Image (cartoon, rainbow, N blue to C red):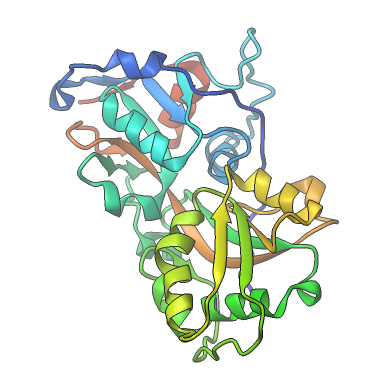
Length: 301
């Protein structure tokens, strides 16, 4: 039986602009005394939905209630980045900025960015598992019905939940299979699998699960298509039949709970990141809320 994760809401967002990038050009990160610019994912992103639910709504506030007069969800100092890699590049280019990404994406980019503590707790797998680190969310595969999945799709899920698959997941995330067993290779004739959706889930699939799945099935020539621009696309594609399974980095959106099933494959933390040389080491939920909602800079002691 899967572990239950709190539902994560969604709200509206806007597209990225270059204003924030220009603010920190030519500035030494170690000399920065405040964070004035914030980067966010768009509304279709599960990372945005989790940040909204866990930070923006942490005191019972909502984006709609705190909306600016000009109609923006966040303050004017917030810029929008379409993908995880774009958030990393944007924050790395501007030492006066802060952003949030999947914890699993931090390790490969420590030459450019670093994760800071949140409420005095390090963003680590151990702290997520213990519940001490509060910024976490589920990685889900979604589909209309498990019974209607292709045999290849079912076998792919069985690989993720096998002893071999869980060893990969647990390197940077928290696997959700309670009693993993050895993987049984696929014996059918299907060769194509299409996954679309969350850009936070994609690195786990692309760099770990898919290569290992191929290797575990010698002699099979699979074509596994992996794409998408956010959790919202994973859901809409699954409903429309445009994929075998959607990838979302949150719980199902309310409008999809009667149309899709969600299968939790991992828990992930949301890391708050700054440029690697910036002296900021910790942020609180209140500081994040005020930076994103009110445009209040975060002071660096």
